[in-house]
Structures are given as structure tokens and as C-alpha cells.
Picture 1 (cartoon, helix red, strand yellow):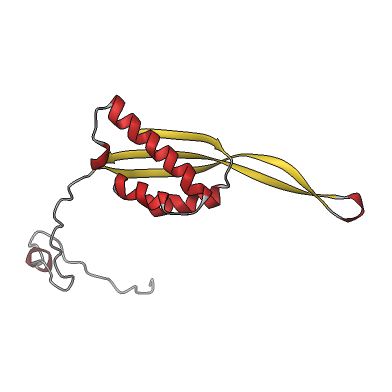
Picture 2 (cartoon, helix red, strand yellow):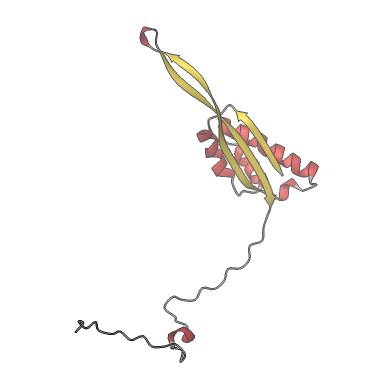
Length: 146
């Protein structure tokens, strides 16, 4: 339930836009959302997501329709160094970034019911009463030495 695309010719900032959109979504919803989005990063992420679905169904015999997108990690890869011509024969250096896209699918988890919180102003009776064994603190006034 894992797929990876290394050295994808796409800037990591642009890939992160789509990654944030699909994190935590069910897989069928994520596929339809990515297919209707007109971005290069959506095409790349869609391909990696379909590869992860194929891995889940073939290797682990899971139903891909019941999975969710657990994590999507986009890391920066290498950078191609290129140049743009300027006036007087000079060159302005630019970098074309690559990225690594990693997708992990998981099963839907049932959340446990939340515990009821007690109000902060409500005090426990045992802590407000002083225990009989605890010595009372007394302070001595410092007197000048005679």
C-alpha cells in the first residue's frame, strides 16, 4: 500500500499543493478530484496513487475502494542548473527543481469516543483537604544575631 516516484520533473512547492488536497481522503474521491484538476502535479500524483492502489490489490489483496490516502510526502530532489540569456552576452543562472513523491494508503480507522472532560473550576475533594500526616510549614522571622 505504498508507491514512490523519484526524480519527478516538477517543483516540490507545486506538488505540495495537490498533496495537501488529497491527504486523508478516500482513494476513489482523491482519484476523481485529481482527474478533474488541470495541473501537472495532479497528473503525477494521480499516477503514483494508481500505482499504490495496484500494489495494495496485487500484493496485499486489499480492496482499493475501501482505502484512504494515509500520507503523501513530497521531498525535494536534485536541481538542474540552467541559464537564461541576458544583455551583453551574460547568462542568468536558474535552477529547475525535481521532487520525490511518496504515497502511502491505509485502512479507515474507527475513532474511539472522546473522554468527557471535567470542568477546570471543579476541584477534587481529596486534594483540597490537608492530610493529617503532612507537617505544617512555619516561617521564622530572621532576627539579627546578638
